[in-house]
Length: 95
Image 1 (cartoon, rainbow, N blue to C red):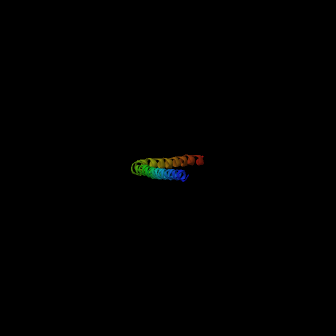
Image 2 (cartoon, rainbow, N blue to C red):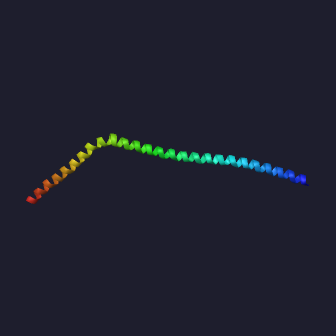
Image 3 (tube, rainbow, N blue to C red):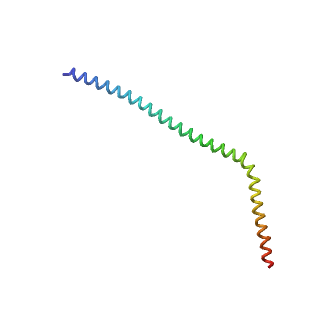
């Protein structure tokens, strides 16, 4: 009778050892997945910061100098529009 219990106990010990090995492997795999997710998030943030930085650099380096004259002309046109409105309103006051 004791022999049966000994063999069952040995089988249970072996089963527990195999389960412990599997849990260790699973834990290593999960840690690897988590680390990969962290790296992915960090790379994604760095990528979008790089894209935004390059776009801002290009805007201030290339686009802004080209837009300055256009903005100046637009401001001048607004000034001329006000002068023309004042000019025509002066004719209305005289009448």
